[in-house]
Length: 543
Image 1 (cartoon, rainbow, N blue to C red):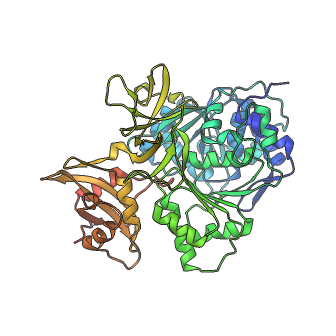
Image 2 (spheres, rainbow, N blue to C red; image 1 turned 120 degrees about the vertical axis):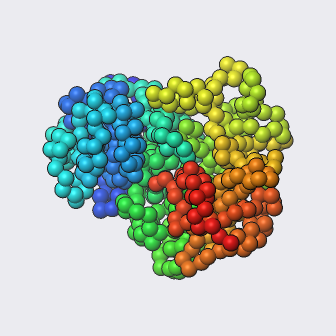
């Protein structure tokens, strides 16, 4: 009998044995219990093993949201194989890079992606197994020699007869960030369980698990229902999915291929969801628009939490949610693909310009990185938000970025998140946002996220990004690229007047560009490179 570890497959199996007949997952018309999810994952794992997939092998997951995504993830974990997320929005060059960089030997994919895989498969010479999930398209499986997913499930044994696993087994999360090619973050199971999933303690008065078997006592007697709205290929959504499943809760996925606020509220009402998990304003805005355009259409009395993680959730949008859900907890988590969850903003700003404030601890600090040697900040100093303890091993196949991001200070290993932060006099931490995007205008430091929050409070602005563009006097100036609401054309003067109500005058945009759409990744992350190019081109310049 294998000894349970802080391996996600071990934890899931213990939860399944505790509540086997409880509903685990809903995605569109698909509904499965914990025991059904367990059996199908076992079958897929045995099929993959029969095809030569073994511990340590990298398996690409190239799918939209579906039950098969989580079945595939669990099957990899059961085998001690390493699942690798593939962004379904990637085009040829990005796909070529990830198929090569990730050293994949197998890929589980929706059928519609066969042409894209065929075009890039030469970049992964070790890729030997393809399994296709049906999606209504009719591409010939023979083009890449892909097995049909349900046939593979049927062939595999339902037995749970796998060997000893480890909390050090890996999951690799590729993150696009805001610039450059994707980076594969190497997360050991135990580290990601404690750093990103609360160690099993989110819904239990007992707190985090001290030993793996504790997960059974963290299963709630009355299961909650939570909906993950982002694609599962995005870390925040996958982590949320695991949090729900490892608590014995019901997980609902958004099965629609595009994000539509009205469709989401239909799901929330039908499944009586208690918690709605979004990724920043990119999701908050269409959800709020749907509520405003359809008053009293939905019975949403089941909802008691709207939570965001993975992107900026502006104060203006949080306030709007409180109007619709006055008795709800509105939560805004800080974190990244590399850090997991680094705390929850309690809405208690202590420094002008900060996005929020979190508690300092032995595993959470501000590091002064522009000194040699690097050191921890003193009260009042601004540096880089950093995490120690349960952190990734580094970036896969990228020792240079690993060395730059993961540093050792006084014998302790730290992750530098890249977010600027200030250590306050009360020993708490104010977080400002991505330091690499900081705008220096005449010696004043301006963080784009703060200005973007101010802009999104404007009733005519749908979305906004802020970048630095050249200025003959101040070196750089604050430039905004926005998308306007239908029928609205805000002027620069109007935008400046509104912004001055919440930010200092030197932070107010000096130039305004209106785009048909503000470009973001599928997970809502800002595309600052696109925004800067759009601004420098002079396109959409507003008077």
